[in-house]
Image (tube, rainbow, N blue to C red; front, top):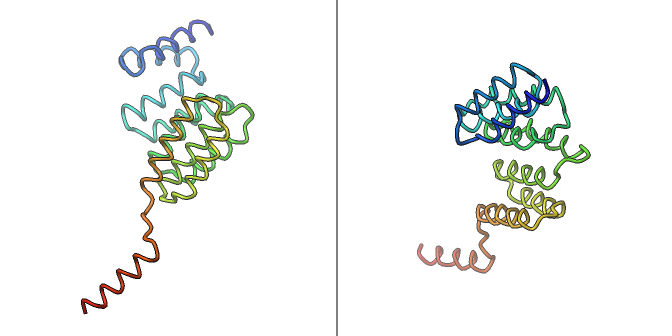
Length: 178
């Protein structure tokens, strides 16, 4: 039975996101044979989140998968993405913090998600501290470049600081105009 379920899961994974009709058919078969299969539940959650924009339903699938296996790492990142898209910031932070304690989890990715969380909350300095932690926990050159892109984007959103000298000059100009 496990092989049959896995075949349907593989078929769904192979067709995602290009042939959603095939994906849904394969997932429905997989879940009819094993309604607790974490890969099938996770991909179903992704379909609901990424293609149907039904975040609550997606979250429900991710929670079902996590209830089956809290260490199923394939769930972590898509689940966090949906929590952020749904603006469930407190729950996202709690789950990221939990994920960081799990042995074997991808700490670099989790720190990037935490940086994005703080970016969405407009706490750019704190976001940059998590970008730094993500860099410390990555061991992949390509992912390092991706982290640098995240850092550049966050820095681009930070308010520009006026230096003290130019702000004094601005005050003097305003006084002279009066």
